Length: 266
Image 1: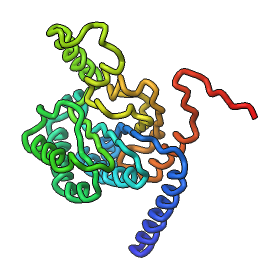
Image 2: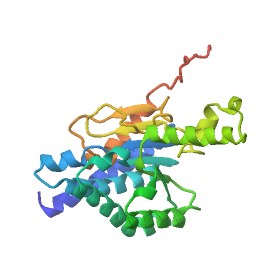
Image 3: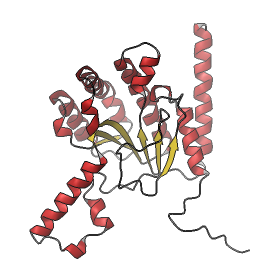
Image 4: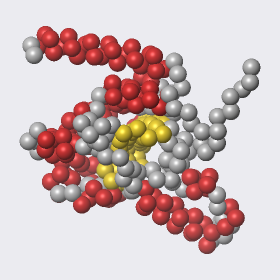
């Protein structure tokens, strides 16, 4: 493909995405979208490249999805970046992921802040490497008063450990008589999760072809709509067009929350 043809194709794709965004915005937009960004390593291996190359390409996709989310008017975007189980990966791969996180924040923080994006984290970030921890805290502090899209980056996060944390905190309050056992309900548990104060995800997207939740937001996704890409779409392949496809699919679903849809009589 010639350079001129490449830029023409890219321009057409951007125009098509912008048109689709306007169409989708005319219907109900999910307030909170969560994404399991799966397949970076497999994407690279399939091409005979180091797994770190897949993670680097994945960061670029994350940038596009954040931008598209802001244009759509989504309020919360939660990205599963590094799980509690990911520490089992090779040390070189973990180092590459953390380095890319730092690189992304250093490069993009000013733009994110300028675009009114709020950065937050879920998970125990105290166990991250020092440089990554400092850059994340810097990003959170700088953007804490922003009122646009809130991007929650799940780092050293696990859904089961999140619930263990909540149980421990509530148990401590019962032991000190700050709470009575009768006070414990679903709302109280939600108030002790990392996502306290946020609506539960309306839509969860997973790329890479695997159809499982992988210990992500286990309590919060009780009535979340799920969308899985096919096996050929790893996270580095995931475009804004795929993202809009998932949201369009969400808009065509009937959310019953365990009840039934009652049609009004004429």
